[in-house]
Image (cartoon, rainbow, N blue to C red; front, top):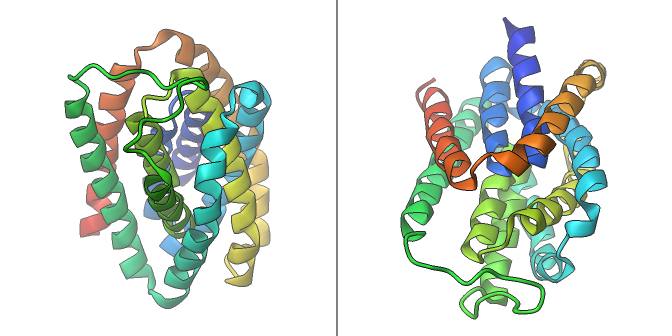
Length: 250
């Protein structure tokens, strides 16, 4: 049963990297549910990086570097805060914290979906972001993404909220997210290693799951062209909220 869950989680990671990032929060919940919460963050990190490589390769030309320049300076402080949090809390607190983070992000995404009834001017490289999404908003998103991704590999929800609020089109969303999380996940490696979270079985596990991640990413590439973004968003919010419940009460 555990092997099946790992395969499902790895497939979702690959799919999320090339289709819709928020879906990876389901994998976060799966990993946290089948292994100690602290170790689950490191084990899933290795799988996420495999998906990152695939996504960066396919969406590398779609990245919006202006958005990254606004986000990156605040990411490192967020990662440091997340590392400190991992170092001081016990496994039960971490598990419930992961559940709370997932549920909070799902509720926030639901609130955001309700606001989409108003027409929004799409953001392009020429127009730039709306005025209300300033450096302050970017700093908050950067710190939030850094903290949640270090503590729970749940930074995708924060990034999704930030980019969606700016009306970023689908391809730039995928390209920018791909490069952002490739860099952020690589930067998490030394922090996780310093906390003693990695083990040889984790690397072997990631190795045999790699083909599953690639399969999910390949299917995600094709699905991203066909499936409605609105339908995907609603489904991700619902499944994410449901996946958070066992972690909160377990």
